[in-house]
Length: 388
Image (cartoon, rainbow, N blue to C red; front, side, top):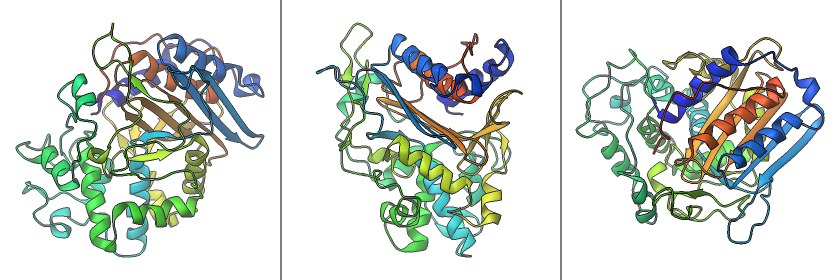
C-alpha cells in the first residue's frame, strides 16, 4: 500500500482512539478556529504554505497560512490552482463508471480481454480490481531518490512506458482479488481503457465527461504542459538534503502520472466535483453504489471504494464518516473529504509533501478539525516515509 496512505490511516486511527473528548463542529464554527489553527500548525512544522476551502449549508469559508512563494513572501491564494495528485483517480473512476452505466464495459470484464497484451500477467484482472487496488499490480516508486525528482522534471514518459515500468518484471503481489495494494499503474491501465472505449484521448474525455459536467472551470489535465497557470502557492521540497534550500517543484512535466495523478485544480473545484459525484449528478445510482462499496485497505481507519476513500469518524463529529481522496505529488499534499451527502466539504493543501511527513500529518489534522472540531491531538507518529 502507498506509504503516504499507510501513514494517513495510522493518523486516522490515532485521531479516533488517542484523542481527548471530541469538541463538536458547531463549537468551531463560524470562525473555523480549529481548522485555521491546523493550517498554522502545518506551517509551524515546515510547510511553506497551507490553504483550505470549506463549503457547507452556511456558505463558503477560506483560510490560509504561511507564504505562497518563498521568493517574494506573498500569501497563499486559497482560490488558486495546485497539483491535486491522486485525486485524479476519482475523476478517472467517474468516467469508467459512466461507461459501465452506458453498457460499454462491465466491472467484471477482464482487462486482458479489453486491452490484450498491455499487461504481462496471465492471471485475469478485472476492471473492478483495477479501480479498487485489488488487482495485485505492485506499487512502484516513480523516482530512484529525491535528487532525481529535480533532475528528471522535464522528461516525458508516455503512458505505455509508465505501465511497462510499473508491471514488467514485477510479479503480482497477490492473486487478483485476494489483497489490497495501492498502485498508480492500476489507473494508467484504466486511462488506456477509457481511450479504447471512447476513441478519444483520456484528457479530452475526462474534460468532457467530468470536469465540464461538474463545473470545474479552473481545473485541467495538463499531461505535457509543465506549469500551474494560476498557482495558489508554489510547491517546495528539500530534494538536496535537509540543510539545502527548498527546491521549487511547481513547474513539472507530470506525464508519468498520466491517469493517476495529473490533475491541476482548486479547492472550489474539488468541492464542486465531489458534491456533484456524491449527490448523484455524475454517475447512475447503481454505479454510485458500486463506488461506495468498500474493502479494508489493510489498515484500520481507511477503506477503498472504486476511486473513493472512506474514513470512519468517532461519535460527536459532524458526520459518521467522510469520503474523498488524497493527493501526493512533489510540492503538494492534498486532502479533499466530504460528508456522505456532501453537505459539508473541506479541501486542504500544504505546499511541502515528499520531504515533510509532519506537513502531511498536519493536512489530515486540518480535515479532522473541520469535521470533529478544535482540540484534536494525534499522538501516534508511527508510520511511513512519503510516497515517491
